Amino acid sequence: MFFNFDFFKSKTFSFGNVAQMTLNLALMGTLFILPVYMQQVLLYTAVETGIYLIPYSFSILFISFVTGPISQKFICMICTSAHILYRCLVGHA
Image (cartoon, rainbow, N blue to C red; front, side, top):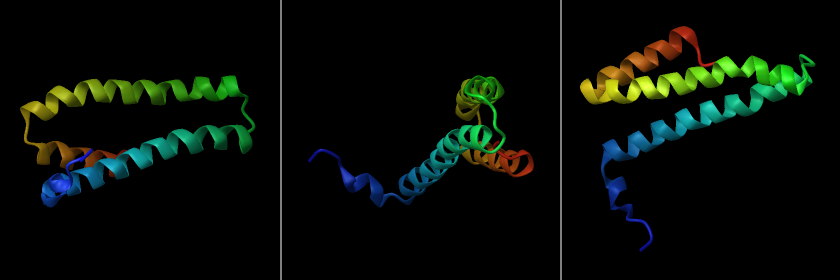
């Protein structure tokens, strides 16, 4: 068998995959819709759009390097709760 589906019998594994898929859909959806919106609605050029999206890209890069070591030191529930609270207060775009 190419993939062992027995992993999905674990609720933790299944819910973790659903949460990760939801996060990736939101992130990739934003990275697709935002440039289209900026170019079609706000009439920015491709270069202007790219320049405006640089901070967004660097923030994703920075957060990914910071959260790895933090999540290994603390309980995952605390990290997840803090992340959800941050996303609710600040937003993702």
